[in-house]
Image (cartoon, rainbow, N blue to C red; front, side, top):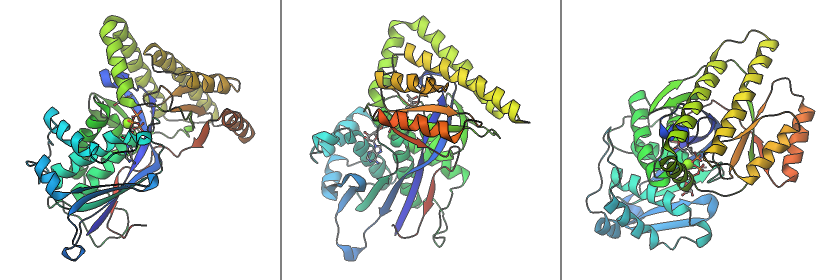
Length: 387
Ligand SMILES: Nc1ncnc2c1ncn2[C@@H]1O[C@H](COP(=O)(O)OP(=O)(O)O)[C@@H](O)[C@H]1O
Ligand SMILES: C[C@@](O)(CCOP(=O)(O)O)CC(=O)O
Ligand SMILES: [Mg+2]
């Protein structure tokens, strides 16, 4: 039996970091996915290992089931609607399983993703042998939510092959889970994100699970409906960074300057709510769209200023901001910052020639641009054969 799951990445239009501290944020799914295929061997395969193949990276990891049983004896068969959190002791045991795989130094950031895989897999399926293959269209560690997409796709595949979820195996196309399964997938993915991020808000796994455009605050999501075009240019500065470290640095700043940071987070909350209200209000004509886009641009600039206050901007991000400003375009970082990806709003009346010029200038600086479709599908599964 083999299942494939795919889960989208995301952009955060407003509110990253502040959302970890209880503020509202607005995020949208993008049409770039992480795919996980999961297969249990048949007795004829004579396989006795849990294997993880990170296909695009050309890396394969394998743990004999006996070893997993020895290190993690109590795990398995646990598909409850309130998944357990990974204890410190368990985290150490999982780290020892990852360490023995000698992850190449150049890919050491993957260790947390591999740990999340081991925790989620063994929590649901114990020490049953299996092969998981992961591929992704998302750049890893760039603010587009690859960690959440991995955890959501993985949780979906694990739950699809567990006894507690009833699905139509005969359907070969992409299928969506029912509401109660989506809720479980989201909760399990959040536990995986905790291993990768330390203290995630849950916005990334939620938008990857449910897709669409969402407003999120303290674990609660609201689906947003819009008839605005909302075209965003995503620029990857290609400066590597790590969400866990950036989230921790904002928390440390909050401990040092509690009152000032509370004001910053409150301001972000207002920005996110205003942005959500603008994109939701009905649009009647071009003039109305232009007026709204001008307001959104101002909010984007204000949010970026506050992210700078939090200490998560970066010289490369400032270069993109300066470059796009020459074309009167507004830009903010998206995700954890410190490098990674930034967003530029492309107003609906902006000519294609200008867009081409901006992209050419950004790419001449060594950045990589893409225009992602936003607000699309959430997690889906398929019982067809893998490609
Ligand atoms: N396809 C993948 N395969 C293995 N690990 C992954 C994959 N996608 C994400 N990860 C894990 O997530 C980490 C990146 O997450 P993070 O720093 O939160 O950035 P982002 O979520 O913005 O991409 C990677 O270093 C790795 O540990
Ligand atoms: C900084 C934060 O708001 C978003 C992180 O997104 P990403 O992992 O950089 O894609 C953290 C969170 O909300 O969990
Ligand atoms: Mg992440």
